[in-house]
Image (tube, rainbow, N blue to C red):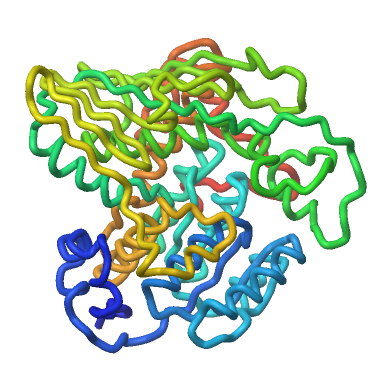
Length: 455
C-alpha cells in the first residue's frame, strides 16, 4: 500500500497540475487517506535544509521527528519554525550529533542539508539506519565518496534522491519534451554552460574564539580544521576547497546534470579544465574565480565557464546552459527558456512557474528561492513515488554521482594540468597515477573515508 497520496483538491490547483498528472498518474487524481504519516528528520538546519524540509511538508503527510545541527542557535530556531509549519504543531527532538539522532529514532526519510564535506558519511549512515535519503548536491567532495554512496544505496536497497531539482523544473520539463525530444534542434553537437554570478566570498576576517553555541570541531568533521574566522554558514564555507569543489562543484553540477538528463548522456569520455584565481587575489578564498572545463562526448562537447567578476555574455542568462543544434538553439536557465530556430521558424519562450497563490506561506519564508520552490515540490513527489514503487527517482544517487564526479574531475584536470579519462568500472583515471591519487581526499582523524567495497 502506498505510504503517501496527494490530496486531489490541494494539489491539482496550480500550474504544475498537468506535469504532476503525467509524472505521477493516479497519485495526482485520487483523494485517498494516506496509509501512514512519514517520519522525517533533517540533518543540517541551515537555509537550504529548512527549505527542502518545508517543501516536503507542503506535499506530503509527514511528522518531523528530529532535527540535527552543530549550531545550537540555528537548531533552536529551526525547531520553532518546524513546529509552526507541521500539522501536529510539535517541536521535533533536537540533536547536536546526527549519529545519536539516527540511533534513537525510527525514520522513513532523512533530509541532508549540511555542507558538502559531510554529505557522504551522513547519507551512508542514514541508509544503514533504514531511511530513504534526500541529499543536497553536490553529493560528495571526492569521487570515491560518491562511489561509496552509490554502493550503500544499492546494498541497503534505499531510495536516494539528489537535490538537482532542475529535472523537476516545470519549464525545463517542457523544454525537454517540446523542444529537445520533439527534434526541433535536430542533431546537437555543442553545449555551453555558464555561471557569471559574483558569488565568491573573498574577505579577510580575523581569527577569533569559537562561540559557545557552535561545535566547530564537529562542523569541520572529516575536513581539515581551519582556524575559526567567523560563522561558516551560507557562503563563507563555499569559498574554500577544504569543504567543497568551488563554483564548478556548486553551480556547474546543476547545469551539467540537466544537460545530461535532456540529452541522455552518461559519463564523459574525457574531461579537461583550466583556470585559477586570476582577478580576486586579495582575500582568503582559495576557489577559482575563473574556470573553463570541457566534458567530451562523441561528436559533442559540453563546455563550462564561470567568472565571479565582469559581466555575463548574455544578461538574460547569467547562470544557464545553451544547446546548439543544426536546426536551432535553446537557451535555458532556472528562470526561462528561449528556442531560436535556424531560419524563419517560430521562436518559443517559456518562463518559470511560480505558485505564490497556492502556497502563500512561501512569501513569508526567509531567503526562499520562489522560482525553485515548485521544482523542489515536484522533486519531493518524485522521491516519494520512487519510495512507494521501489524504483529509481529522477535524480537517483548514481546520476548525482556522475554529475558531481565529473565536476570534481574537472578540478583534478585543472590541478594537474592534464585531461583526465575516468574509468567508472576500475574506478581510476586511465594511465594517470597522480590523478587517480586525487580521487579520494585524506580524512581528518578519527574520521574514516568510506569504501565502496565495505559500506
